[in-house]
Image 1 (cartoon, rainbow, N blue to C red):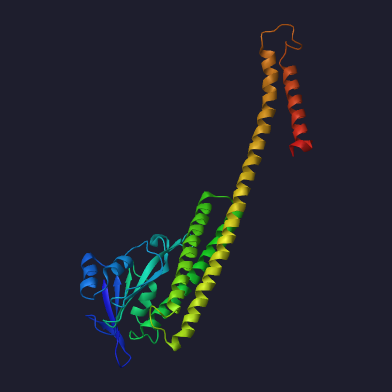
Image 2: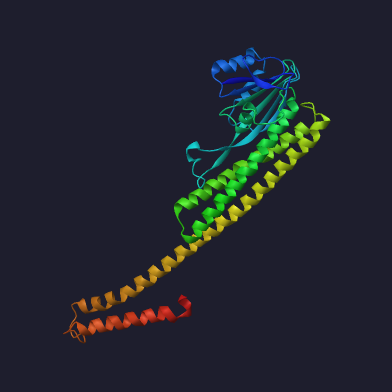
Length: 319
């Protein structure tokens, strides 16, 4: 899907049919024909198109000296499985690349996403106030600010899920809750890696060598840095807490297993005593005491069993 948006001199932003100077071209899940259109009609460097459509591409900045085109790729948070998004107790997250292409010769900016992006939807639907397609640097910074806020919202959601699962694990150690905790840990690893890469990209943008920065954009860029650094700190804190909690629950499970095994061993040893007594009287040996009746062997077996249980109960070595 290709969508063109432009802000006109009367400060009205609306969609247009064809790309023209001063517009924003939003590309979502492009087909093979649309990818070719990006190269031929807009004149985008083929390497930039390939990088923008690579799902595994990490956040970075690239610049082409011949065409003065700049490519900025940002990792954005996303729900891993849309089918589980309705259940707030089982939402897992991942990151997906969002590409910004600055084309100075065509006087336009192009965004490319593989599965759509909530931030771009806000701009496309006119829910961002004072959005102007001619202010391309401000458009990038406001998009980055919204992305950083989405990171913070996802991290708070992870914290709520973690608290809820931890409460359930304290009551009962279920495999489902442990699997959910593992999913949260994987989401935090994605976030931590992507946020560090995004911060490095922001440093390149702040240098002003890739895209032009204006004085009125400096404060907005500082706000973006603050939000991303806060997200990095939150991600590191939650990762440390989750790792220590998982390690603690792992030790609890191991300790419970040891207790169960010790109990089963004591029961097995105790039950072996009556077996020994009756096996002794079951041998074909003559002149055994009290061999004429089964009551005496039963009494002996019960007495020995009670004695062994008392030893296990009151001996410090078995506590």
